[in-house]
Length: 296
Image (cartoon, rainbow, N blue to C red):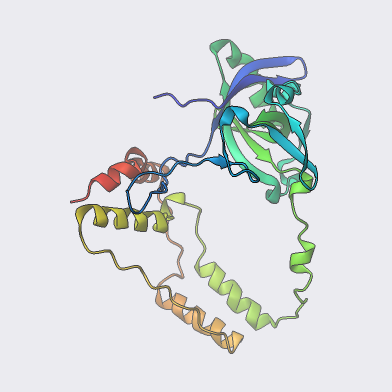
């Protein structure tokens, strides 16, 4: 089944434009999800909205959006009034400026989307924009309305298409100073830093997302399978409490010894792209529900 776009419109660079579609780069459909159930009847619960004063249930067609301007004092807005405020970015991603990628602080990054041409006629202008961005080694900044609000998007060339990453606004990002200002500026000995650097070096590797499994998700699947089959509950792993560091230098030395005994002095060779793809293919093909149904 072809992926479904959650936004369609136009990508515009000055006078060059083409129809495009945005596709979420991340899927959460494989995650375990739960419904709320009445313990006594086993029936699924239904969420309802209740008037905070009268206690009466309010139907959806009686609901309206409100902005609080004072205690129990609201300015109400109809959906039609909100829709009338639609901006150009509702239908067009107009690239306003280009900046070096390294100038964008990682803390501003939010969600990622794949941006692709929406028809064959769009291929040529789309490729022109993509290749020009790749040649200049710059990323574009634009705006687009997603889920009812205008978002800043960073656009960069990725493989044959473009990657659009939504960015947080400045007012959404907290200043780090209140969190870090109480950390003292300590002068550490060279030996201490060398030991810590050695531990980091023994753990050096390459980023391979296939090595990181969602252990909590797997534990939930095992729990559901056991209950479905009427088997005893799997024992939950008991986390080890970290030991209190009495002597930091001694802890660093013991860490170096422990890593050496594990044979971690030589970094493990990362699997090839072909091997990684083969290893990842079964997990993509099998859905979470299918894994649960395989209970014996």
